[in-house]
Length: 564
Image 1 (cartoon, one colour):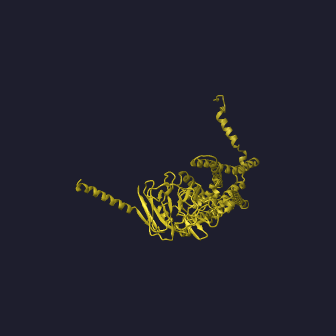
Image 2 (cartoon, helix red, strand yellow):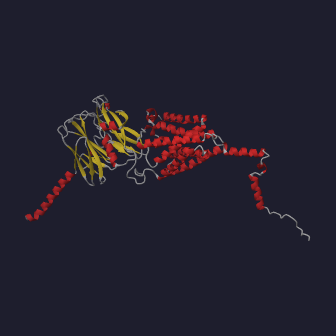
Image 3 (cartoon, helix red, strand yellow):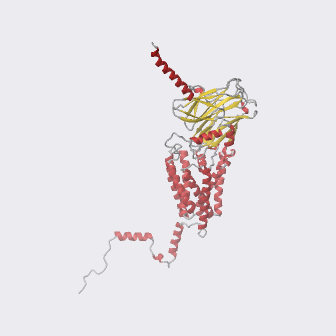
């Protein structure tokens, strides 16, 4: 074959080779230790992450990548395999370096053929640093520095593989379970941290900024919150309260007290909700039924806050409704498998019945103190919930024993109505102001996340979930929460002061309508000078009218013709 025939083929092969080289160069990202890199992974693309110029004192390298809600695959090889790769939203791999090794390559791809934006960082570890996940016995990786996170409506659980003590390049790793002496991995301790992202911010930029702030040890210790410390003999897991819609980054730092060194696991994040769900995902978190229910609750609470004592029957109905609806929502959820909307509707119907019964008990028997006890229990419930919403609720004595928790809770709840016996009107007005203002806060939470809703929600979760006592109930306190605390205080104080001023010259409580009717009837029977004494009662008047309609009336007057 002539040269002119081969020339086009050679030209095409040359161009193809040049394109391949350019593609590989474009798909290569060079990392420097401790420096963050933003990496975009296109469809059907593998990105090579390279580290060069590694100092000799570095014995291990951890490479971590984070995305908001898309999985990425980080692998030791260009073609991922099950035991040499990690696929997750927050993925990381740890590499042990050889004696003369100064460079390293790992590979990043998108398993779902989606275009993914991610952020990554390389963190070096020395030979005296503990090795995160080196005693892994659960996942397919030999060394797994990742945190495994799972969440549901009630709890968020993180688990991790135990670490091992460090060792120099080229040496064999220490055995994990040969002994439990002070020179083994059993001396290691694990500090668990959490970092709250800004409230009501589901943006990717906010997450990446948070990852950069806490990816290393110094950042997490400075910006995060230390939650607990586990020893090597404890279970390598921690349970937290789920906060749907709130971004949280969790991290574990393993410490070696002998060498006074430490190393971080790969941080993980969660919003306790799904970005993929179109019905009830992170972007549309609140159900329509919940928004309608709590909007009405907020409007009624605003009315009770300023006018509850003046319209005593309306206040009793609202308190009875709240008491019965809450109790039966817990009962229905614990004993049935009804869906959320149906449970909410049934609880609302039973709440109406409870409100009517409370009003009718006051209308019929006129016992103000019996009704005030129910009102006082509502305020006691809110005060007890607020007490355990503080860091006091995370004390081990309350987390580890349901009996201690509920006995203390009930004591606080019952003490409050005792003050109402001495000051019933003042106690009732304070309940209207405080509880009514909190109902407004719950209505705001239906449209905008606020941590104050967890004052009552934490108690509800503990009633519905048998294992909730083991969780940490920390929630973020940010700008919106301080604003709503101010709104709660201002509404409550204004409502209390207004009602105390308006009711200062009125009777403590309105009289019972039934008792007033009974007294009026007795007065008519005994007072003969009262014109109403000679007026037939209503049943007699009704019977007389019926007889007039059914009996034929005879004409009155003369029946004979008149004489002229």
